[in-house]
Length: 134
Image (cartoon, rainbow, N blue to C red; front, side, top):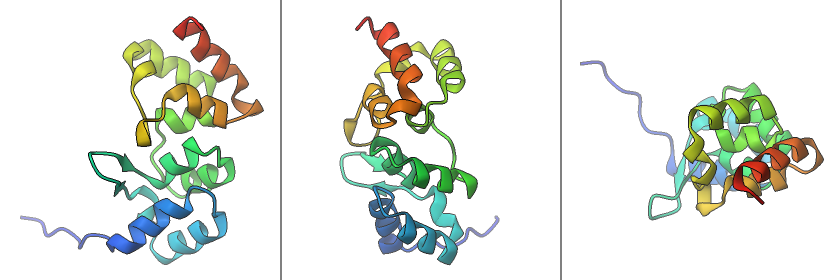
């Protein structure tokens, strides 16, 4: 059986996710220190898992999200929504229409991620509203 590498330090995981809500410089330092943190996830309890990219996505932290993606973060629907990637969002929701109502970290809906993206995500927000009938 192949031996697995040790788990990432829990405090570094927590710190990375916390800082991905708005502290780009610290996120950069942490990823430089331990590149595998780019895809870590913190459990806030009750199955509320959040990655650094998830934190950046629901808070509209475009620069942090783009940094994480450039360093190997796994793109998800919530980040694509905040970043205004209309083609990605349309394709995902065409394939999985119920994803429109799947909550993200902290139970934050997809629509709120589009709102957090501001003007660059305006077309995504309009698309989501049309699908939701609002």
